[in-house]
Image (cartoon, rainbow, N blue to C red; front, side, top):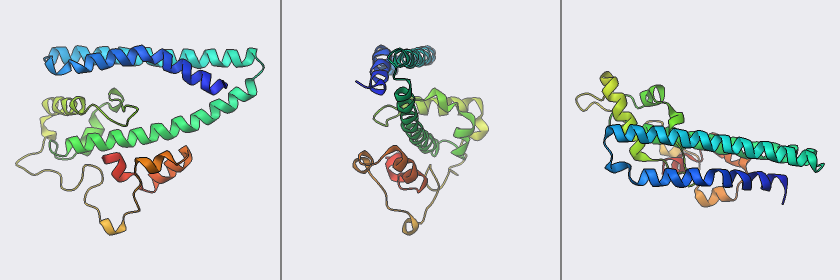
Length: 205
């Protein structure tokens, strides 16, 4: 097993318990009142912090082990490759998250972009399957409207166009890629496709 594989395995083990607990909490969130949901959000934040610490510890352990085994150069190469993949995934997740938030805000705010300006996007998570908890996003937008009612759509005058980029001329759009296409691409190709606008439909689906 390579250093990279060992690191990934250790990270997966470190986060398994946190993910399981978060899933159990989410399953019962609909039965909670506002106070309960706030407590649940606080608990989820703690789980995310525990997950972050677990990943950091796993990475540090892998580095020490590689040094002890004389594989420091190999480890550095593995870490560099992993960073490229992580950066590509992070960029794609941010695009997914922003598209989801804008779409959810399109029917509630006069300008959906205000949701991106005022909400803490780091409080939302994109799952490994690319899904986001829509109820959590909707609740955050409702809370935003409650605290800043002037942002709400008034008199039916709501944002026209999509929650992502507004009305777009379909004839000028680049060819769109789907999930199966992405499986065949490298992280660098995914980033290039995203920058070229070829993931617009996929990230909004």
